[in-house]
Amino acid sequence: MNIKISLNDIDAFVFDFDGVLTNNLVHLDQDGKEWVSCSRADGLAFDVMRKLEKPSYILSTEKNPVVSARAKKLKIQALQGIKNKADALSSLSESKGYDLSRILYVGNDLNDFDVMKTCGYSACPIDSHIKIKELSNIVLNTRGGEGVVRELLEEVLNLDFIKILY
Image (cartoon, rainbow, N blue to C red):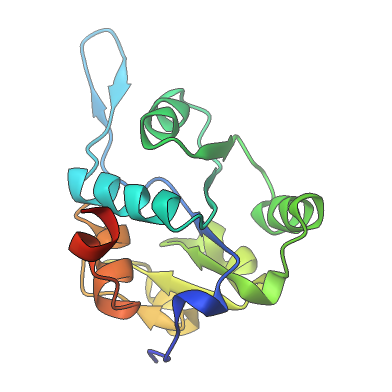
């Protein structure tokens, strides 16, 4: 059930990490060190949000430092190791003065279910859990880790990256 939404309707963007900004796979080397794959196309999308002064965050249950490393590269804040995402989002909204009904959350799996119910707008990648797709206002055509944020901004919000960035 895709809805009509504009950038002016959103106070902040919040993204799950694994399965949204990554392809939901974890790679391990022989020493047990984990690494993930992310899309550079999403990096450009975060540049657009920064230019438009739209706050964005990563909200993840994952404790691995790869989450904060990616957030640092994207120049956004990561809230990670979060047990209850709905409570964390409520606290973030309260501390920053955001209206929960004006937050767009992008998640993909069952640990995103409750937090997606608390915010005004929700989206998910095409390869999300069926219950998340049923709950989402917007089901994207992109799989997790393959440019979800880029599609959200360009195709759903109709933002012209060339006009905004160059």
